[in-house]
Image 1 (cartoon, one colour):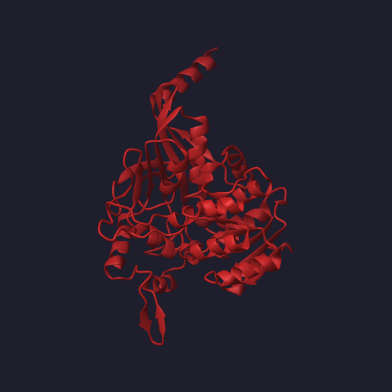
Image 2 (cartoon, rainbow, N blue to C red):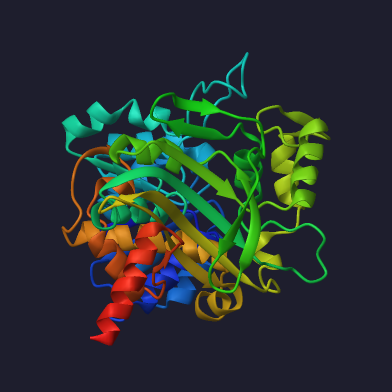
Length: 423
């Protein structure tokens, strides 16, 4: 595979380091062009790789013609989009025009309903891309969207549970929590400042079989979820996320939600930013001789996740909680991946949040390059066989875990284990 990776931030660096450290050398990758608006940053990431198959280039992700020219210059056959999702439409369309495959970690953006934003969806995450499914299908091209950790790995977990662990599924609930602490920093973003504001302040979306997609108030339906890996109880709330738009397209179930551990203090800070107009990403304000969106200004002045992550301690857990029936009994299972921040810093030079995000697209590209996953059109990760993906996660150093929660089926398993031990 000859890959054009657009974006050399934390996720981009993590992707390069994961490929570099893959035990067999990740021979599926013939060449990767590491392209970023900041050429020095792209060169820095390429230097970390220390291999001639990685090449640094400067690119403007908002310039579709430049992206197409870059694809042609290096004879690339796939684009990996790792920049903020406000560039997705341009890169997605450029990939189609260039006649190459496409992958992103977050889908094209939503727009809230003009009259009932906390009741009805309007333009949903990924609508722009799925509206072009037939075009991609007819051209024989694959656009694999929502391929990070959440969405991405979480979707694969849902498919794995559907394939192996349930006869029928009631709910698929993605749950993300952590016990991160950043000593000496009052407010910190573990991930992209721009994206965090976008997903947390948009109306959360839920899917139900009888109702379809609908939206709720920000930070609605708080619940306490017990996360594995020593993290423990974390209060999680509804947040807009792609899994809710992807999973029910493929997997038969009754309800899909996404909840994330956002502290009450962080929620208050986000709502205050919104009230002051500082979360706006579209309005331009004039500062001296320049114009800038308030949110873009915040990205410039907020503590950089790349910097705060160097002192951040703790673990993050991304996973999918599935409930339903197996052998006529109620069952409840959490499939997950836990990453330690300081361990990821030592291995990849990046924090655990972006390292977890990078493992999804790297494994998926591996499977596509080796012909294990294939297809055309616009698809999410839950479209494909989950088994080779889950196996590859361990190869890349991010093994999956399974937690059987209390249920009648869990009691049956325990009884069978006791009986087997007695025999």
